[in-house]
Length: 339
Image (cartoon, rainbow, N blue to C red; front, top):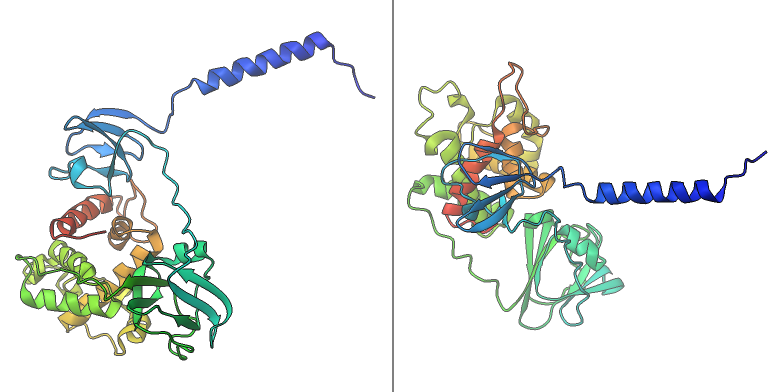
């Protein structure tokens, strides 16, 4: 049996709900904090806002600030402007003129056309291309298509300057990212930073070439090696000397042994400095792909997969992965890093 509710009671209830909605709408955003002028050695949280050089900046990554990492210098940490609402990534519009990718050999099955540009896996998905899908492709005259086995332009790279009715077993259903150019790919323009020893740069470029990164990854690896071992100068007499140029711990080396063999075609040799850089590069590339960008990849390369701001080790000591990432990312950008 239902009870009747008077019109007056309904009106009072409606007014109360309206009052509550107005009250809560007027409350400030508790996630964001205006922190005043930016200063070094200060812990900032995501969406905190600061002022610097006459402008306002919003924090993108929780971190502890350092001298030299002023907001204009570290775009991975600070976004110009006070808005905290992220701008949605636009979907890749369908192209009407460009390279055509086919699901089946002999230009059969579903076809998707992509114009010039660099497409990571999420962009391929937005355009209608699933992961590991392409079996044939048509390349316009004078165009170049670079197909990558892994997301974010990692893994093996295959280059096409003409159409292929069958990409072969080694490439079939293995495309996870792609770069498309009119003409030849632009020269990377990457040169060895002056402070990086030539042998270290050679190691880094060898790994960069294996991952098809165009030189930018070599800059990042050099920045990591500088932080971890001072380009090898900090190893003699160090308790971590056995962990090499990129300070990869023994248990981590063992965990990645099979991946190293699959990627580089040889068993890992810890006495080889080239292999030390190759293994560190393999791990770092995986972290970047897994956590979305270089800065986050550095956080978890140093702090582990489960790192979070405020995390401590088994002795209760803080794991300062944010300070590590700040330092390495800043060196990388100083070298001319583009990502």
